[in-house]
Amino acid sequence: MSRKQVKGEYIETDTGNKVARKANLVGTQHIMLGGKTVIQAEAMIRGDLARTAQPASTTTAAPGSNTAVAIGRYCFLSKGCCLRPPGRIYKGTFTYLPLRLGDHVFVGEGTVVQAATVGSHVHIGANVVIGEFAIIKDYVRVLDGAIVPPNMVIPSFSIVAGQPARVVGEVPEGGHEAFELRELYKTVGNNPQPLPVTTTETVSYECLSTKFSSSMRTSIRTFGGLSGFENGQPHLDEIPSFAKSSV
Image 1 (cartoon, rainbow, N blue to C red):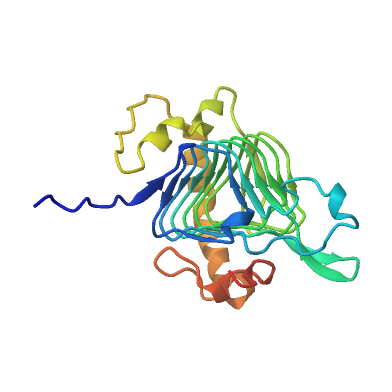
Image 2: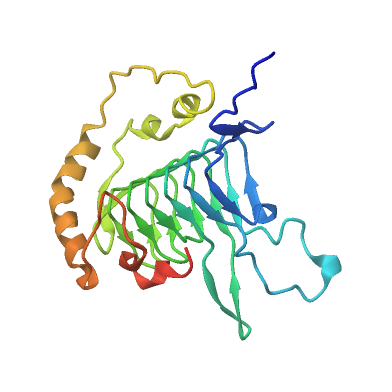
């Protein structure tokens, strides 16, 4: 008797996407993946929050205009993160607008993203909240625990931290390679490969992270009178009101 084939942890698509079987993708018909993207277990994408306002003429509607979440190539969505489109009242009706991620975007564990657009080569740390309609340009690093207010525009080559978030530094010259996710992509899946050893150290990022970590832990515990994180993950009630709606 032949052995029953064991299913792998990930479903791998023809375009190279690696989606964990325990990932939660809602409204997949409204989610676009550019290819070579990793979606880990317990990550959530709210494709069901698609735009409800209908165009005046159905014959002039552009193809793909009802996309809720569009993700580029070589993106990495960590465990427990959530991508949900931002919403607002448009012509008297509440509607959601698309959330778009560029290429080589890393989203850390427990992070909630409700931005309008996230550029390419962006690293968003763990337990971060990106408010509605925020715009993050290319080559941006958002440090762990940051809370980016709604409508904030983060310029390219910025390092962002704090609650509320602010620009605390710049991506150093020669530090652009740290945003590439091709090698990280290879380490995940049903046949993972080890991450190659590199001698390049982004010391400036580590220094900034250490510098702001203690202050961020304090502000997390006092933000809005909330009790803070537990086991490294925020409770739903501890996410600011602009990011709480039906995660």
